Image (cartoon, rainbow, N blue to C red; front, top):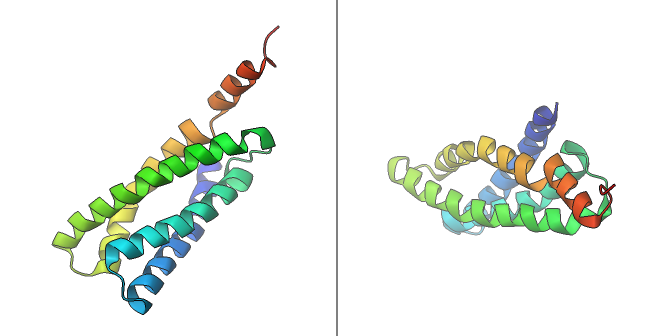
Length: 137
């Protein structure tokens, strides 16, 4: 069920990502790499808050800062890597919107796995509670 919620949120976030890309690319005349960066940042901010409250149903406030740091670190890695992949795909496919779509498909499963394992994981919650002393007998 988590994966289904993740995909639903990602579809909405991808709408923001592609929408931001199209606006910056078509209306502001920026290149596809700059437009990709803007779209990813807008979608990433949206996705963090919705994934935290809906996908992974995290309610503890105390972990929000750490989760935000981990999530935005992931985003900070995703943006340049996806831009490199986009640059490579653009060498084969000259249509920027289609090239962006292909580059983005590569990251869906990878970012889900990283988010689940390192950002919103139950294991990280347990380690945090042990560090806080709540699991010590």
